[in-house]
Length: 467
Ligand code: ATP
Ligand code: MG
Image (cartoon, rainbow, N blue to C red; front, side, top):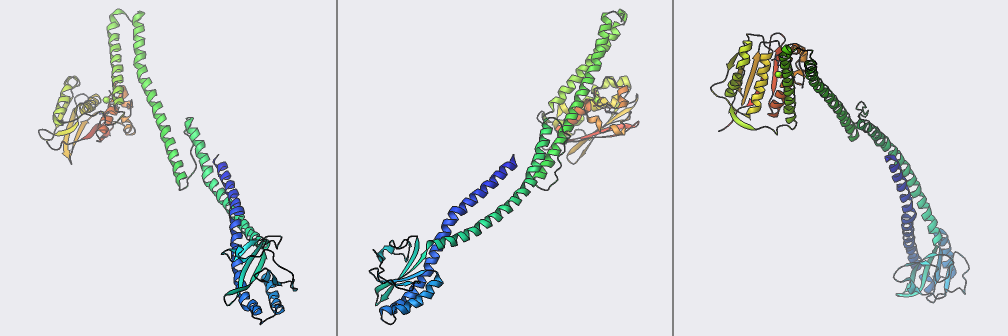
């Protein structure tokens, strides 16, 4: 679960921040306070050393005078102020008023301070607890006569640091709370939609494309949801198309098979007398041809699955091709007393296209035109050149196509109700093949038709350029 991870990250963030403050920030704050206190006490010490303590060594002030001055200052600084001789004897010891005359710092050695002006420790064993000590030499004629020392217990600094740390902890708590609000918003705007999307994806994978994802935000999640919705609709139509296609195929295969089976059985068990067998065998042959045509058509369509790869483009004269295809219909034309009128541009008109495929397009269109024409009518085939293209039109004055069928004629197996009665042999694949071929050439085909008046199919081909 994403939100569990986010929560875990959030808690981890909190713990790490807390640890950082408790260790890192704590140490640095204390160091900072020590240094800061030391430097301000050092300034104080220097001032006291030069202004008062030096007077004592020069005999201008008594120890008592100085002590009384120091008293107030040490109370103010909340620190002890000492004056010691180089041998460690304590001369002034403020704020305690009485100077312990015997008091001496054992092992006092100013060099223990090194180059630093302050030191943290027990001050040569004088204090039981850690103490910050700063010193300033009391110099007369550039010679140290004694030292002014200021002591402050480290404990006080620690409590100051703890005060600061408490502020840090409180700030962290506020940040932590704010982060929680942000986390909540994040979970609300990301995790919940993602969960919806995951649920929908699950539905899709189990074949249920009805689910719509109800997210309309203007961000990546919203786009993802919209794309998935789009995908689902596409997939569901695809699935429906496929189902329809299979239903059509099975239907179209079943009817000839049923009639073949029926006639064969009837011939075998003698229901059809011997003299009549020829007639029914012919019907069987006819149905077999139809099955053959159906299979061929489907194979043909299958070839165009990968678009454009099958084309064998060459330069050829479309006028010539039209004449050749028209000629091949001579027999049918005579039978139906249909004639052609060819209106072709100029002598020749060279195009670059796949000649055998275009032949098939012409064949299918002319085949339809003859099939759906009345006896004695004329079919007009016309070519026109315009803007690097040749427009090829096949026009008949036949039964026409009803308005609500006009979009569907390109679908596989589609036949209008008008043609179902007229042409039982047709598979409804002819125009689907035509459409595939023309599209594979990146060209267009259009149909203009009026029911009862006639139909015209127009498609384009690119004119051949150069030699
Ligand atoms: P096939 O071409 O496989 O023999 P078909 O001719 O029925 O079968 P298509 O060529 O794909 O199939 O045509 C689909 C349908 O479009 C036809 O059944 C018919 O209803 C309609 N149609 C096509 N051309 C014409 C036309 N010239 N006049 C009227 N209807 C047409
Ligand atoms: Mg046809």
